[in-house]
Image 1 (cartoon, rainbow, N blue to C red):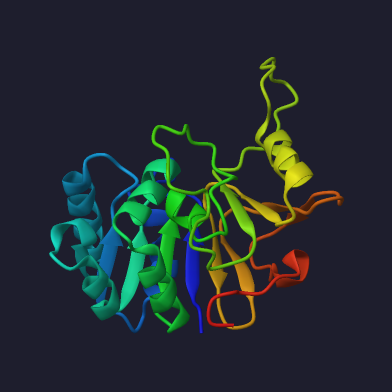
Image 2 (image 1 turned 30 degrees about the vertical axis):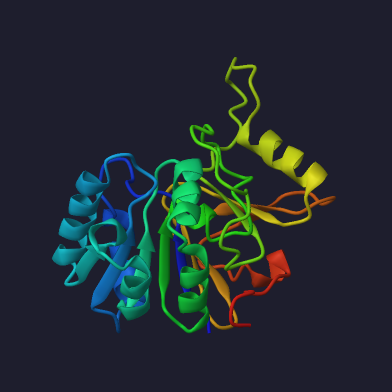
Length: 240
């Protein structure tokens, strides 16, 4: 049965790396000790792995990075949980294809291994990376991502500012454009927000709300503590 913790952002203004998500991470990973980290969203994988290892060590977990081991697939299979960090979504997904890790992660999560994603790591849990705001600095083999859920996330969601003189597209407009061409619902997940996917619920947690967008419908504002499953009318695909 699939279990996921999908975080909008790794660092919240005024706090350190993963500080705002620590309570939820500890509760979500309460039965885990050994974490495998996927650092591919940033260029300097060594530095990123050190940052993640130090943070998870402080929370009482052991962490290894897939780029540091000789058998990444085995490391994923043997770990208690998977953590996929944020950065550039195109770079992350390309490396998941290049390292042949997508099916390994899918199978592990389907078997009940907890998955924690932050920012880009949350987007690649979705069917595709089409709701990312990142520049395509590299070209993945496909836009198809892990598909651990059948909705999309648009992290770092910013509401339109009515006082702004900026004439570029807002994040809401870009999501609505996505829905002109695609069926999957989109959760605009504000910074400080996260989604906890369990057996029969998709709970919005954290300090901020979110907006749910569906094709042909008005966006819906949802508050922390809300079960999003009725709004998304969806189910977890892997292991369902």
